[in-house]
Image 1 (cartoon, rainbow over the protein chains, first blue to last red):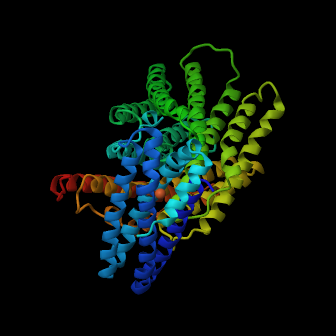
Image 2: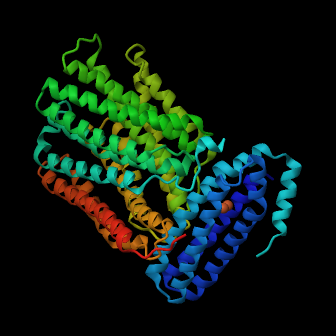
Image 3: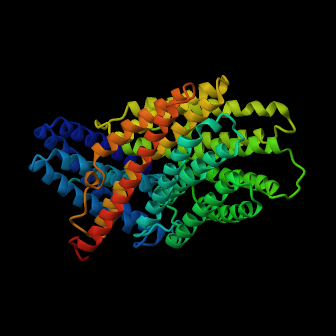
Length: 146
Length: 414
Ligand SMILES: [Fe+2]
Ligand SMILES: [Fe+2]
């Protein structure tokens, strides 16, 4: 398996969970929204952790810079985390409009972030890293938990 | 490698770069609707000066502004390409394009050599400088299907513009030994199918999946589509020497028809539950594109196929604007640390966008019937005018809210 395959698959899984939470919110079922949203948030935060603790350091080693793309990616992770907080608030106050509006921003923010990772960072890492190292990286990422 | 791609914290272009182009574009949309109201009876003659004035208000003034705005906005996201000092470049491009379009349109209406020459100068400056800036960056990167499509469309935009300028120089009195009718057909086909449709297709490769969490297009399809269209259109351009090549344009249109149907299937399988106005604008756009293909290939009616193409292009323009504009306002304020940044729904309410959608659909519907019942043009052009006024007000309102928060908002200091 390549780095791109592994991490891109996680992006798609997060998208699916996000869509489930949104569907529940659109129905006005905030119990279900909360459950699905937590699924989404957990998966996304774990994915961020894998990137920040394992993938980005490797990438920085490869490119020899830590204030380049990975810094932008970490900054965008922060934006996503902030937005998650606001979405959780909207769920607590059962504010459907606020939730759906925040969801819209979240989706675009997250998608453009993922796109940059998939098309640049992951693709580049796969070109530069040999197979055995990829295996090691993926198994290390698999060991992580929130 | 990343030094070139210029991925940086402030890689998003300044918000006004995009919004200014959108705002001016919507004014041209408004003007085009007024032209349609008064001049619809001249449209049956596709070479009449009024038809030319209207089509160029639509393609250059309206579509040109919006498409350049979208390119400036999407390039950093889609290709990691950052255009250096976009503010200056964009201001120059925005105004020279608008002024050039005004000169061009007036030169059609009042055949006048000086106006024609001014149009040539301003449009060359606007188009070739933006093509240069954008394609220079696009040549450097490792390509996705989307960025390939953008490169193809921007190069063909330059080609269409060159052909247009060649025709203008004939009008201005320069003597060039060339077949005018052939040149015109080439200009027209490259502009519509090489630039406008191609750019919309490359945008759809990314945003259908991204905005609606829909299945992605098959890689083999999206990877080879841009280059296939490029080659086919190049073959087509030799049709003066090899007559059989003139039918190649039908293949190009069949491909676009296929794309429209493929997109409809994909977007209907979206995972997100909400079908907002932008979703329906995509649907209307893609249905229009497929109908256009049928009408064009079966050669049913020129005015009808033109109407359907316009409906396709404008629908997508609305779809993109109602998504991008509120997002940009929220995004830029949020990134600047304003914690009371208006949410997307507060920038433009979904209800407002839906109302605009309904009015637009009726406008398009009546516009299609008007090709048979001329009197309906008064209704359809009025509805189209209202659609563009609504779009203008939405963008204007978004800019005001942005500026209001900049001045009055509460801010974190990083
Ligand atoms: Fe990430
Ligand atoms: Fe990621």
